[in-house]
Amino acid sequence: MMNKLLTRRLTALCLPVLSAMLAWSCAGGGDSNDFAKDAAQGGMAEVLLGRLAAEHAASPAVREFGQQMVADHSKANAEMMQLAGRKNLQLPTEVKSDQKSEQEKLSKLSGADFDKEYVDYMVKDHEEDVAEFQKQLQSGGDAEIKAFATKTLPVIQHHLQMIKEIKSKM
Image 1: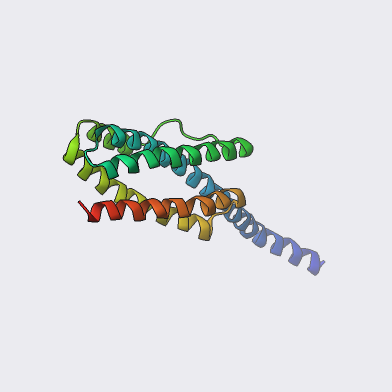
Image 2: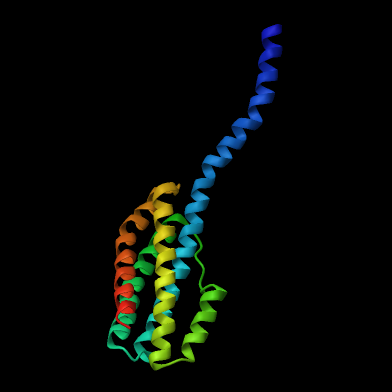
């Protein structure tokens, strides 16, 4: 009798803790899903802004960098779309409001003014992207999304190196 009572009390005490632990361990996939959505929006923004750079930049290096952004991020976006399809993950179809604001701001500029604003934004954006991709590699809960981050991070790091080099020559 005493064992049954003790077992019931322990179960009553432990069940909520175990449920919370299970929910916490499953939430790791949610973090990866959020990362995937942010990466998709970031990739769309890179393509939009890269097209603007190809049209509005004065510097050949900035124009070429913009074209590289379109090529590399279009490829990564296609890979993310395939991954999302396999996981039944709904990705955003538009960029975030701050990315849209930057696009609008840049679309009104040209020449050296465009170059400075675009390069500054790209440095900041790629620094943030590198940090987010590294965070996903360290603590992401979904193996396939981590694999995407592993594959894509070196490309983003290369972009950061390229844009910092362009900025140093301006």
